[in-house]
Length: 69
Image (tube, rainbow, N blue to C red; front, side, top):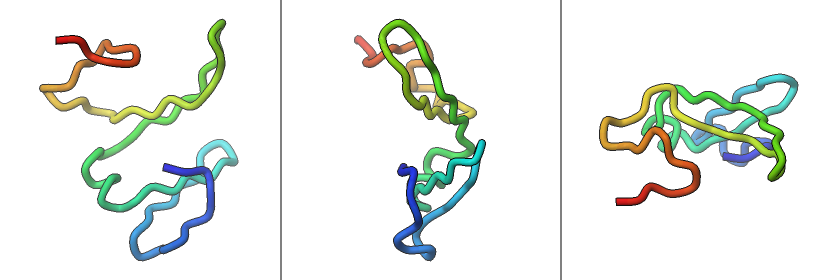
């Protein structure tokens, strides 16, 4: 995913959110399904958090960086 212009409109999905344009490869967008994009600021920094609206049943929904086994 990038904050950029699409380099190949045939292979990319482009969306605008809050005045920012997001570009994601169609195959990745299809695999992820609907996404939520948030901008978070906290004591450790700031940045975008991108997550699927529905997590796969095998996904770890409460991970913060990595999932432990």
